[in-house]
Image 1 (cartoon, rainbow, N blue to C red):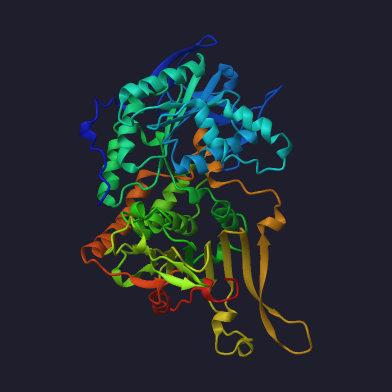
Image 2 (image 1 turned 60 degrees about the vertical axis):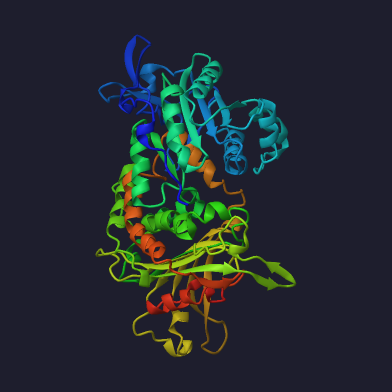
Length: 574
């Protein structure tokens, strides 16, 4: 049964988001500080004495604060004096797995690396009854010191846990959020208050929480921001409804739609590789690229998430967001700057240029039970939380095309699945054959082996490698396909930060480049909604594939139809 979203009309009176402002008198100047639509932006500024340095995902230092006045004029920190501010982070749904396994550990990692301001508090909010000490005990089990300063790990952990508190309340209760507001104010102790809410909750209660938090627990002196986890609806209509409801209480600039794949190191590096290396940018078009493959596979099934997963399926869960966002970043034109709006504008252009998805360019599958090595692996419908007659796909492959001058005719092949033979996420760029190749006799009839291929392995074992043709040393003329390999673990021994660390830091800083704008979301759903509706209306039966296999055979036929061979099935690096 589809998730039902809260109706906007059921909420209390909505105040215009832009009307929350606060008059502050600072060092002889009367300054109107917008409390909802703006954030104290971090800019480069030199301080003497104790000081921490932050960097946002675009590489700029985040060392100080400036404000905008009522006319929109930026007032530098040197004019205002450094305000005594406090950052309050509230994790709504604090007792859930995402909060325990990802969000609290990411906040601790930021604290461990001195990336959080001096005055900060973390509040957990959920319906479960719990004391502050019980919360600390729960999250301490998932905190790790993954960095090389582990000698003071215990001390740092204790310091972080003393900043963590808990408040129990209903998600739709303005009274309970007013109580939370009182606790936040007590910890803020009269300082300028900046508040970040992370919604680690099911989407059907997003609007209730945003309504209550906005009306009863917003900052009255600083900024208020909300991080929203996917899924952002399940089709174009429900996504639009959710956005309209959220915007009754928040401005677009206050909404941070998080897709954690955009925070992964190799996805971040994609634009750097392309735009800062002359060897790649001239080749980044239909003239030299034969196809692009976006591959996501997991070697486990739904594992207890069957009930949730059955309502969405692999297309909504992975393709429509993670892989499509990577595709847009890969294919976009050069933005005017690294500013968030410039980059997001180019991504939207790509999404709006895409050819409508047809059923004939999609293959769906579902894993079935399989016995291997004396162990029985259950099928998808063996999960007691999944209906026995479910046709929800656990695997999907699709061929997408971009109708613009740069990419006309180039197939972008997506593949995502659960219970496959390996766990991986990668971007594979297969280049065209060398025209009139002098050495084609040395490759035999399989010219694909002579094709250059650029691979960005997002996970596991992050790497960038380029497949080239090379002469094997010796007296004869024997050619070999070799890799020019950048293996991150060898080149950069320091452990790579988790994607949630980067995204949380960006949200605190106000950097929106890695978050999804509402028109991006609309364009993504416009592409996938008609296909999803057709699949569900016609009850298309997915092709069955054994647990632990390479997926349904139909995916190979789909690739062959577009004269493509899946790069991850070549046997060379799988």
